[in-house]
Amino acid sequence: MGLQRCEAVEAALDHLLEDAARLVVALRVQEGGGAAGAAKLGEALLHHGDLERARRQFERAVEIDPAYAQGHAYLGHVLDLLGEGACAEHHLQEAIQLAPDYPLSYYFLGTHYLHKGWAVTARESLLQGHDVAPLDPGLCAAVADTYLQQSRADYAAAEQWLHAAVDRAPDDVRFHLLLAHFYVDYNVDPGLRGV
Image (cartoon, rainbow, N blue to C red; front, top):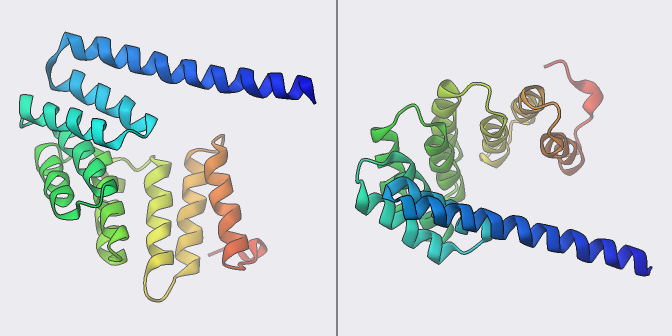
């Protein structure tokens, strides 16, 4: 039992050191300045779960450079997480206008719409992102979610998109888990694939 506890403490310390290293790198980038530096620090803070401080960094990024699409995208995402949907949508739309080839903006906007219960609108945004980045497994998984969240769930379409996510990232266990949870949660027989 003692050895397992030591290994758990060691793993926790490793994780904290990784987080600290990410923050130090982000701070160094920020010192180099500009919108990208502020956004990099914002991303590190977001990853660490500090939404308010992340928000301030993304606000700083778009203040430094109002045409910085990535700053708008992440600011919109953080605002959405903070429950400020109207402002979030504005920044997400701005990010798409500034950089229509940046797929993360479509993902964030799609998940924003999905949180509002607008599955079809969410799917439209996510499919636009998929057009930009057809190999992105996260977009495929998010599209699958829209089929499950619509008023009449379309299990065959959801399964197809989840398989697309797994096909695009066969070594990423997260997508395999999403597919497995789909089969269990919706009582779908995986042997019936062939849709």
